Image (cartoon, rainbow, N blue to C red; front, side, top):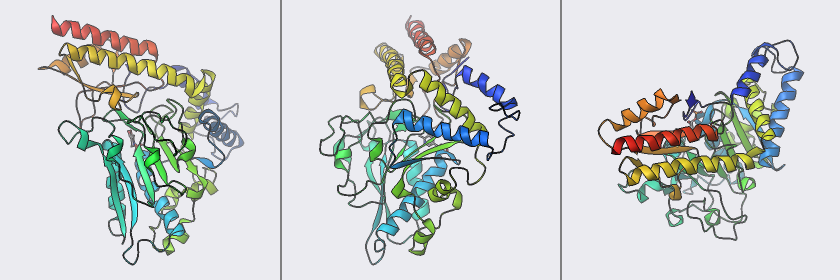
Amino acid sequence: VTNFSAGPSALPPSVLEEATAGLLNFAGSGIGIAEISHRSKEFLAFLEETEKEIREQLDVPSTHKILFTQGGGTGQFSAVVMNMLARHALLYPNLGVAGSERTLDYVLTGSWSAAAVKEANRLTANLPGVRVNVAADARAYSKDGTSYEGIPPHEAYTFTNNPALIYYCENETVNGVQFSKPTTTSDDQPETDQTAFPFHLLPKGQLLPLVADFSSSFMSRPIPRLADHAIIYAGAQKNIGPAGLTILIVRQDCIVDVDAAAKLGALPVPAVLSYKYIADGKSVPNTPPVFSVYVAGLVLKRMRSLGGPEKFEEVNERKKKSVYEAVGEGEKRGVFRGKVDEKRGGSWMNVVFEVVGDGAEGRFLKGAEERGMKGLKGHRSVGGIRASLYNAVTEEETGKLVQYMREFIESETQ
Ligand code: PLP
């Protein structure tokens, strides 16, 4: 069976076999990975190697720490607000009082960034002087004014002067909308690609409080301008491993004394959400999800042996191209309708489209199941079809889907 699910997603069979052996005997210790102490020398060595894999493969500079935690993307919707508000309160203790404002800028491109905005509003509702600003709303540029159909043009953005955070979701898993890779390397050059994040429009003259949710695109390709981010985070359950592990890349100035900030009026931060607590405890301040870390480490080692993110980028680009092409062919024949134009920010990881006609979607899904292709049903909030093409989905498996899409077009138009 090929698993095209948006997550938890497929993992490479060779890794699952290796992990099965590790469940019985981890790193020659004679103890299984789910049983061994997270403070054992074997596990701590593995954790260090896993961190090194991420640092080397994504070229993470020494200005940034790599942290492992739990709580998923949803945990980070809260954590980024709390830690970045604490940082801002320490840097600018006089904001948010006496009529001045502390702002949080959010770029809205789909339902996950919308969920992050909702959490920011919830947490700050009773904090005096704090305002959540929607810096751009992609819905304003959709056909019906209410859908997420692509990345908004650069004219849509209005950032505030000195925000506590600037937030975007690199890949919107539900809607299939993704920023393209930035083409610029410094803020002095205007970004010309309208579907790339507009770094040149960000406030100048400060360490950028730029936060990005990479949950469904992490490790699918290199991350250009990674060093310009304050925080990059990703739940593991798409490209990396089983759910339970959340990976953070945090610039060191964002690891702050949240208790000192709380005395200045910032939100009190539960220890497990505090970056300082996690960093001081070297990602094991409490029991980490050892099995998820183990599988993630195996996936990352395999990635490196296959050529790393650069190689996966080439493969992933070919994969998505072939699926968008098939959607386009179906569109011409009145069988499919793409939800997001590939050129307006169509996701590489989640291709979302509709099957047109009475009962046609059911026929499409049934035929796919019969051919061993599962997980293609779109998210319940948007419907339609969603083909998720994470790293573990091979070109051959993608080819099988594309071939089926073509057969389906023929059968519907006879
Ligand atoms: N952000 C993105 C882009 C996601 O795809 C998801 C889940 O699919 C989340 C956040 C929420 O993650 P979690 O379920 O780990 O809380």
